[in-house]
Length: 381
Ligand code: MG
Image (cartoon, rainbow, N blue to C red):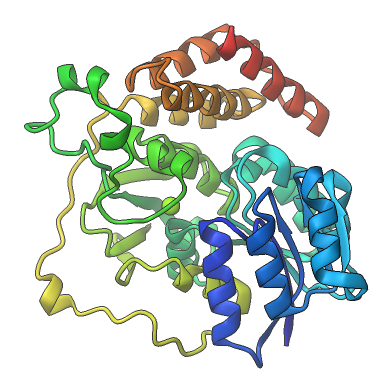
């Protein structure tokens, strides 16, 4: 039995994680839950799974939850709640699926408390990959990927030596604007929010859906892969694969490529991370290749989607630059949501903020958080 703490239980990854736990009641048990502001859903989830501790980010919801759950369950709030959950003595693994940087300190706290972590929040490895992986090695805990691409690479690598790897190939759906004949470069500035939110193959949160439309999401995943698999940035490649069946691939030094395929369902990478190293049965995913018919691959269009080059540069230079890339993009996406920035402005604004940043090499956590704050102010300005 693995005891699981889930940070971010009411979002897309969180609700899928609960499905996985419900699929395997004899293998997985939830011992702690944290949510942002959706008190009603958190209460419902807690009644069903009976965790010992829950936490809600929005402090105004605290009394409502305390009243609903009674004294059986400790209800907390704020960063203290997240740290308490991340270090819960009975937990074996902490799955972090909180949007934004709020997951970073709980991730480090969990590692230092000797817990394996399953990472869905990209910010953790993008901003502080070097520190997180160093701490994980020092405390001999695993950092498992929940993202479909990184889970695929992890499954393909299957413990093989880093020196046997030539390239990691992340697949990208290409997002709603992949087709250059339908969406030429000069049409992109005026695309609407509704058009950008129409992702062809995955149903996800709003922020990540916009990041998929700009290909920023793939850029963040390139940096994550660099740290997670301890590989140099030039060996992290992207290929566009609109069917989203091949979730990613590893190219080995002898020219062999190993890929992981399935119909898209986030329950699969979540289950793999939570139950690793066991592979257990699951009826959710059935992949009928004959019915799918064809799988296609194409070069990413970095002229229309310059965010891939930005991410490569941030990953190569390292230091505080990936944190700046991430923060500037987050502000830019928010401005796009508010209608104050056009679609192509997201990458333009991020580029400008990155250019204005003086990079700190080998930063500590407070320098990373300071760079994040600087980039947010600079982007807003
Ligand atoms: Mg992904």
